[in-house]
Image (cartoon, rainbow, N blue to C red; front, side, top):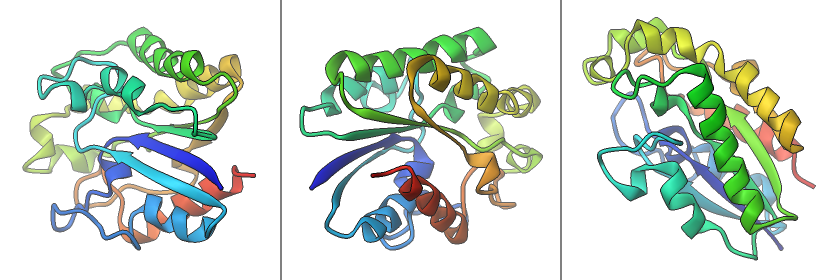
Length: 202
């Protein structure tokens, strides 16, 4: 049995934009992926609400991707899925395009330095929509600049994947964020994400 680490933020955790709770295992994409994989793969769910990829999150180590990722890597892993980076666009972090490129590249290097033979699947977040600016919660974190920066993520992530021989998935080509908050995914989108990731496994 092969093992897959799914490392990410609230969309990996399975945040439900309608209720503010967590989707059950049969709804969130990591759980759907486990069902698709049957007994051939073991899925490790490592999503965390509000986790950043490279910005120092004031909530601490668990919420700061580059700090916690090394603790989750072990020799049993065959795949590492990196689905993270949208929270670094919160206006408090003021991340530039270069910051994003360097920060996500560093996550890939962290994985490669620990696990030379692991297969990495780099997943670029779906673009934020202007609905995030109408959300009572998330409008306090994201602004118009965040929305604009999100439109550049896919190109940045694709370049990183090419430079590091990673598989690449652009969520914009697969799933759409919820009209509720312009940030998270509804159940049918989680299914689409799981199905696409499944295609990258062998």
